[in-house]
Image (tube, rainbow, N blue to C red; front, top):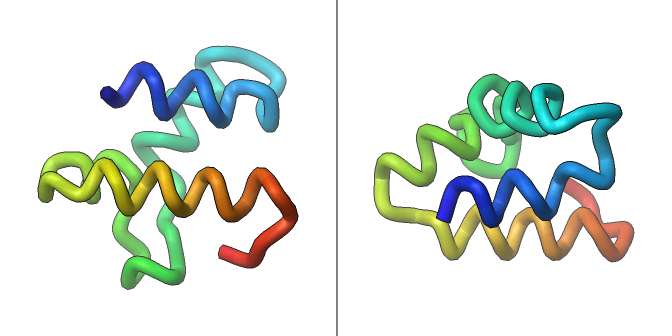
Length: 61
């Protein structure tokens, strides 16, 4: 599932490596500054997917 989520944000970044870095290191304010990887470890992949979908259509983080 992580690779699927990384693929979704790949279009926002300059490379696959940057997409992976975002996934592993970017704190998400709407999730108490947890990273997408932290959320995945908590079993919250659906929340990460919803976040990515919301941002992709111009929503706020």
